[in-house]
Amino acid sequence: MERIIKLWPGYRCVGACETAEEALRVLPREEPDIVLMDIQLPRKSGIECVASLKELLPATQVIMLTVYEDPDRIFSAIRAGASGYLLKRATPDQVFSAVREVQEGGAPMSAPIALKVFAHFRNQEAANAEVEKLSAREAEVLELIVQGLSNKEIASRLCVSNETIRWHLRQTYKKLHVHTRTEAALKFRPRK
Image (cartoon, rainbow, N blue to C red):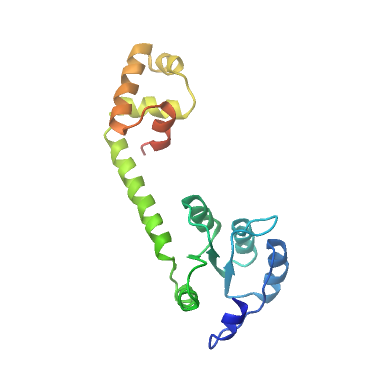
């Protein structure tokens, strides 16, 4: 990347670091506008580095340039402060376009990454729609499950029988298309 950046008119590489620790020492002195960051670094991950770097240099934009396509890493990098997410198989022209896009306020992503992000939000919307089908009592029971209460504790708190709680859970499982308390709890977001 260092050699490629030297070919870009109007751009220069102010440093290339092999570890997160080195980046956190060098980059604050250089104050780069944009950083290309890998996730897989020795000792401290690139995601951890992004979070620390954004505290030191909040105006610096970070583009993840990595082989990882899994949603957990994608969303962790974005939450840490990454402005873009490209796969290493991106061409030099695509990386250059991403750097320019970040400068213009954009959030570049490789196409497979963008598809994963959109799929995540579509799935989240579908889960939210399923939760909206719950009655007020079913949502109340599920909220108590999320808090870690047993069926017996929930029945006691709501002044109903254990069988009533089991009935509400069966209805909830059907509406959410799940089979266990854990699956139901993972889909549930308390109502505002």
